[in-house]
Every structure is written in structure tokens, then in C-alpha cells.
Amino acid sequence: DAANPVVKYYDPLSLADADFWGQGTDATIGFLRHAEIKHSRVAMAAFVGYCVQSNYHFPWAQTLAGAPHPAVALGPEAQWDA
Image (cartoon, rainbow, N blue to C red; front, top):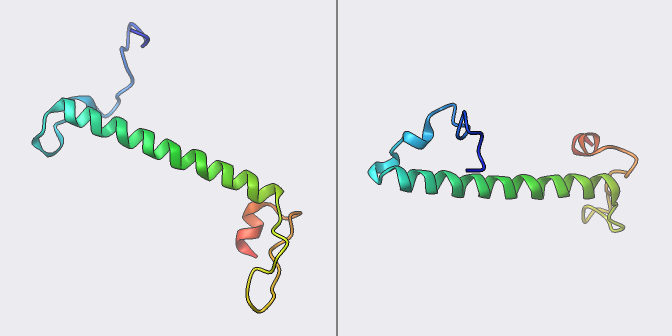
């Protein structure tokens, strides 16, 4: 009901009509919804990690040899390459 009345829902691959593992379309839609929620939570956690890495510097050494963490002045991509 909240979907676009013309399109109904966005399903370009027709996955709502699929039958994964022979359990019916209801089980397939449930699996796909569960997977979408799980992947969106992982993506949100990754974004929070990106923001923390961009703005916070651990005060202790990164290795037992005493090597420091990369500087906060570097962006996350540069930190990953450092």
C-alpha cells in the first residue's frame, strides 16, 4: 500500500517470484528480507567505523614493537595504505 501504485515494488530481477530451495515464494521473500536487513546493518556498522577511524586516534602503540597508529590527519584510505 505504501509502494508506488503503478510499480507496486521494485524488483528488477523478479526475485519475488523465485522459489529458493523449493520452499515456496513466501520462504524466499522472507530469506531475501532477512538478508537485506543483515547486510544493511553491516553497512551501517562499516560507516560508523569509517567515521571513527577518520576522527579518532588510539593513544597506544599499534604493535608490540612500538609502531604508532597512522596519524588522524590522513584519511581512512591513506591509513589503510600506511
